[in-house]
Length: 142
Image 1 (tube, rainbow, N blue to C red):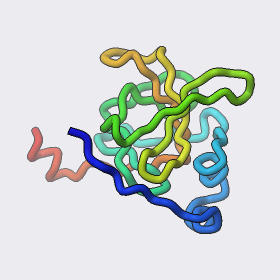
Image 2: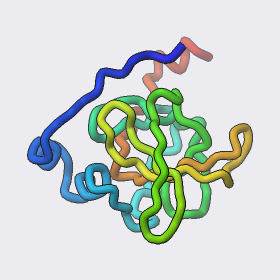
Image 3: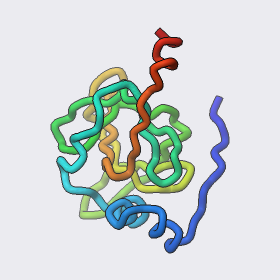
C-alpha cells in the first residue's frame, strides 16, 4: 500500500537559501557531481535521506560498490519515494530519478546492477544525508 506524499514546493530563492551551491546546482538544476567526491559515506546500518526534504530514499543495506565513483543502490526504500522520468540530455537516453516529495534531482537508474533487482541507482552523494540506525532500533530488530 503506497502512501501519499505531501509535495514540497519552494521558490528558487528558498532552495538557494537551504542548499549549498553544489547541492542546488545538482538537485534543482539537474547537474551531476564529479565522480569520487562522496566515497566517504559510512558503511554502517542506516538510511539515506533526501538533502532537500529529509524523505527516506535508500537503506544502507541496498548500497553496493559499483566502481563508478557515485553512491549506488539496488533499490529505493519505497517505490513511491523515488520518481523516474526520461532524460535525453547530452545526446543520451537515460532514466533520471528524483525525490517524489520535493522533486530534487538525485541521479539516474541503470539496468546493470546486482540482484535481487538488477538495477543500479547511481546517486549524487551531495543529494543525500545519512542517518545512522539507532542502537536500540538495531537491537530491537535483531
